[in-house]
Length: 334
Image 1: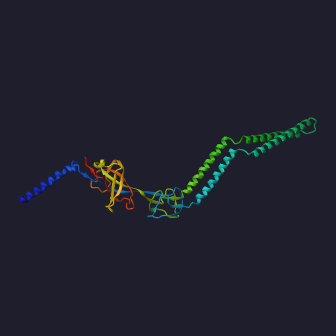
Image 2: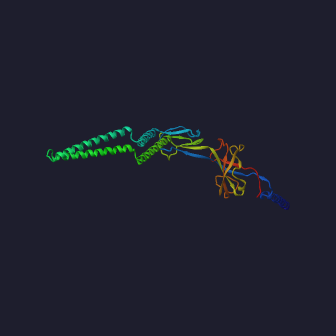
Image 3: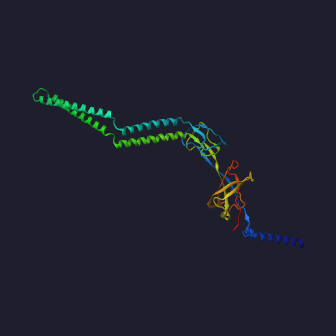
């Protein structure tokens, strides 16, 4: 029994000595190198795609899992109502521009000549009415004509005078041309009609849905024949790039990372194949480690979120996939 106690004491002393000689290294006084390893998940951006106008879906060209390129046509609406609206808007704009041009150009020389001839004709009629009135006025004292005939001659002279003044004003208006206010109002109407035309043209273009970036179709939410509004999602697109990793670094290791640092990312699927990445963002706010991230540290430790951009991610990395981030070796100085 005494031998067993001695043996246990010797083993305990050996373990205590090993722990003591390893303490400086664990406290950071040994100056040895240690690679910092972080854990995170792949974060691939997704885009919900839909039309900017309402209408009936005429065609869906891609399905779930299809790869698409930026600018590729993937769906379209029935465009006939929008073509009709564009035609009507173009006609209104053309009419408004024609009216504006007419006001700016003023009256044609032939119109002015016609108005002048009409004015001269009215002057001649007025002169003739004056002569008839003077003759009737001379005959009335002798009783040759009645008072009614004299009154009729006076009325004819007044009517002729009014027609002459009206013809003169019409001639003056034609010679002066359009008022500046009328031209400004017509210009505003022409601009409004042109804007309406352009809006109709944009609406017609919006009946076609194109992929905004390279990616993979994750979901096909609607089918051909469905009536959709601008708030409805038709496709969900997973972008090929950028592919990011959302990782977390503990507060004691925060000084070892910085934006622009090159790192290596590996996955459980292919641990021997590493992806090159660059730290692009370090959160200025501490938070508790998310439960979805597996780290050797305690769950309650405060960490800082990192965003790491992966260069040439390929097709192996999937949304939410757990990955390991290997930072370059560094001397422990704390």
